[in-house]
Length: 215
Image 1 (cartoon, helix red, strand yellow):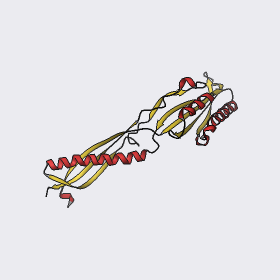
Image 2 (cartoon, one colour):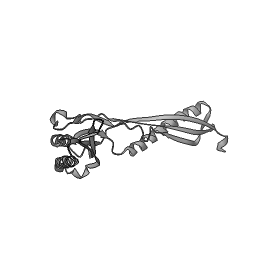
Image 3 (spheres, one colour):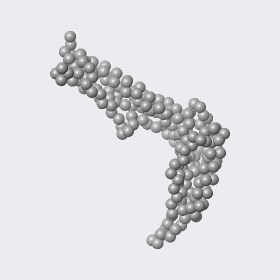
Image 4 (cartoon, helix red, strand yellow):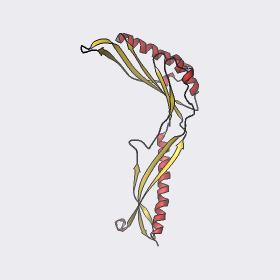
């Protein structure tokens, strides 16, 4: 019988601002050296300094390293070897309410020699925010659909289809980034803002409702 009913189509958006609960430290390791072995030794020493800096906080095991690579550096048409350069990254995620973010930042920034430390903030459970906002968006769409149906002398008879609009692979998640980074030996003077603005979260839905004549 539903194929004989009319359809009302409504779009709705739900928005919110959520305080980020995770502090994310990103470390970039890299240096130009004379030999590949010197690159490996420099990275090992820098890695050890970072781990030692984190040990007092009990979070050294949470630091993940990724993608160590070393490259030959050349110059001139004959590609004369001028040395080697290495690169590696590491990420550390910690809960803001559990750990002293300022102390961790200061410890890392004061220990690193060739690494660069950056800090930003994000949400730990995007799915929970997504589920909550989807419900709010659908409820908002229903109110609009009911108003349209009433104005047309009809009433809603059930949902035909719901489409959830996403931006890429995420639900408009905007990461709040601290506008600062610690360069080697630059601890105290480059302390970032440790009170980030809430993260703006937004998602939208398109809902098609069957409508029938009012009883």
